[in-house]
Each structure stands twice: as C-alpha cells, then as structure tokens.
Image 1 (cartoon, rainbow, N blue to C red):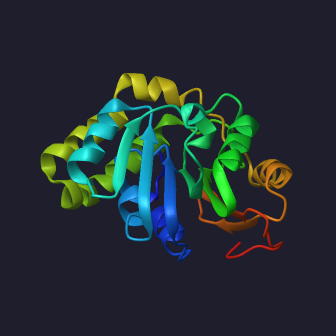
Image 2: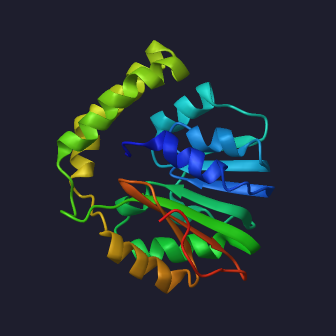
Amino acid sequence: MSLQPRQHVEWVAGLGLRGERALDVGCGSGHAAERLAAQYDEVLGVDLSEPMIELARTKRSKPNVEYRVDDVFAVDDDGFDLVYSHTMMHHLPDYRAGLQHLKALVRPGGTVAVVDNVCDRYPTPPGWMYLLGAWLGFPRQIARLGLRDAWFEFRFWHSKPWLDHLRSDRYLSRSQFREIYDSVFPGAQYADLGFALAMRWTDGRGVSGAFGA
C-alpha cells in the first residue's frame, strides 16, 4: 500500500498515453484502471485480492474495463499497449523475474510504467507507516466510495493477514531501484514521487534521461 496512491494514478494518467489495450497489475480497488479507461479501448485490472476486485467491480466499473482475480505471472493475454503496475512489485519474491514478465507482456512500441515504494533507510518499513497511510486516506475514500465501502477497504488495510503479509515486504533503495530497472529496461526514464519511484520504458524507443527526478 502506498501513502500517496492518488499522486501515482495522476502520474500515469498524466503521461498522456493512448492505445487499444492496457493492463493494470495489482489494480486493488481500481483507481488507476478507472482513469485508464478514458485513454484505452480495453483495460484489464488484475489483483490477487478477491475482496479488492469485488470492490473495484462495484465502485469503479466501466464498460471497457475487466477486473480479474489473478496472479501477475498467470497473465498471458495477447499483448498490451500499456503495462502498468502500482506499488505491487515489492510484494513479489523475485523482483527481477516480475519485471521481465511485465516486459514480455507489452506490444512492440508499447509502454511499461511502474510505480513502486522505495526506502533508503530500511528494507521493511515499520507497520505504523501503513496504518498512517490508511488513516490519512480514509476521508478521501469516504468521498469516493461512500462510508460502507471505504470502511471495508480501511478494515482490509488493517486486517491481521494483510499486516502479516506486509512484514515480508522488501523495499529497494533508490539506487537499487534504478540498478535493477536499468538492467531490465535499458534507457528507462524515472520520476521521484516521494515515497516511491516511477519508471517509464517504451519498447524499441527507450530514451535515456530522467524526468521529474
């Protein structure tokens, strides 16, 4: 979970990319998928959490968006113009293999965009940071989802299974992030979003340099 999910969604939407098909990996309750629906003909959002997918289907349903309970490595659809992942990669046991899979899913000329949490001080942030993020975001979620569904999402972020899962998180430092991403996505571009780094790479047309970093 991120402390600034809205900023991350605004970042990917603000890239101004358009196309036929987009994939939102680790879509959660559908924030980004809903925004991307205005820029792509079809959007597929996948997440391992069935409750989050149900919430996305209920609150962020669009005619051109499909939400699916699935593992990232099980996605083998016929290519995407955009493959987007938001604060999901650090949950994977093999970070590099996950990036390589995302790269394999993008069509020629398509874009991979990834936002993931980073921390230079410690690889596993203390639990209070997650709890703080949920508390700070709760009023905004009430406005977006209504009290009942916002409370459901809030309880999910505070549930023991989720907090136990977060203890296995391993964040990269900023230097580690760039090193690993450069090895998989040569010529990638980066933006620093505070608690997270964002990476953009276009297949066949990677342009060296950084933006907003």
